[in-house]
Image (cartoon, rainbow, N blue to C red; front, side, top):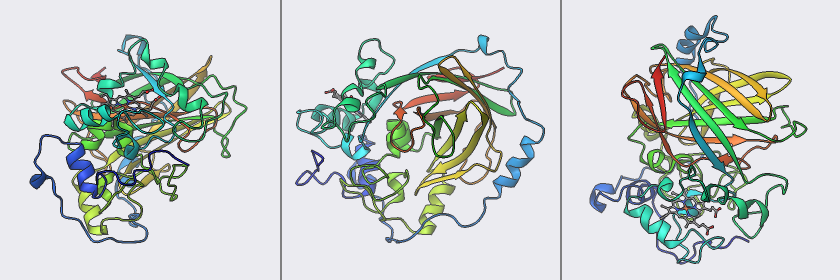
Length: 373
Ligand code: HEC
């Protein structure tokens, strides 16, 4: 019973290429934007072969149980984030104008217009400003007419996080501290209490650069209004997308392999935490779906509970670790998004940031500046 189902609306979502090229990139002409649609390939698109980088990455982690232990984090600049509860607001919802009537009917039409003209989400949704930051998500949590079924009423509508980063020319070390006021009694079925996910994409991944997490969030993911049981994916992995999402309109295996080779994916870091066990860290990528590997050791993490906060330190070797990883090097800038799952919640029941930039090495710039230590 979702409002704004998009029937009779302009053909905004008819072609995946339109979503990524026209909506995302207002400066290019239509002729340039058309990307030839590939053949629809039903069925699974997971890459069957074991990535060789798993072996490569394993070389880096031997004996590196707590590589970040010696870092003096007090001296490292902190990037502050407010993350809000987005309900069922997918990228389709955010690009679907409600003619100014606002949620729950849809995103205000001026938001869609401004976005198409080139303003990124965070221009309006600056979640670091004082007043509005505590408003985003407030109605979504408590009102089930507003962007999906109401969440757990005890769930705060936002949380806060601080991110710091350093590199030592071999590894990147990230320290993320976030507030989780839940008391630890709500556990996921695998026993974890909270989790953090961190995305990075290169400059070429326009949807990552412009929308952060929304590059991956569609109406047909698990738990979303048009649930087709899918995991996060990028628009470009599909040959066609409409208001309900891209479904199984996968590009061919070969086209997906080319996208992966060309860097068109988001690298995805995830760490699960609990007070009574070691954190679980995984590194993977999002393209045609979410591909995660918790066994490679490419991402290592330590975690602790401090008051009502979790503090996680994670480390990843610099460089390209193989398919589905970004060649990270000092002097580069990447584009990110972050999500936090408190209170044992999974799937879409998380808090998210808008898009942000991450620079590695000199000169320091961006929301998160990862400096040499
Ligand atoms: C031109 C400014 C503007 C831009 C650009 C913009 N938004 Fe919005 N957004 C708004 C306004 C205004 C609202 C309505 C707030 C309300 O009525 O409570 C809104 C509401 C939302 C909501 C519902 C949140 C809530 O608590 O009501 C979400 C989620 C959202 N926007 C996501 C996005 C995303 C993702 C993007 C980028 C793709 C984006 N917005 C770009 C202005 C903007």
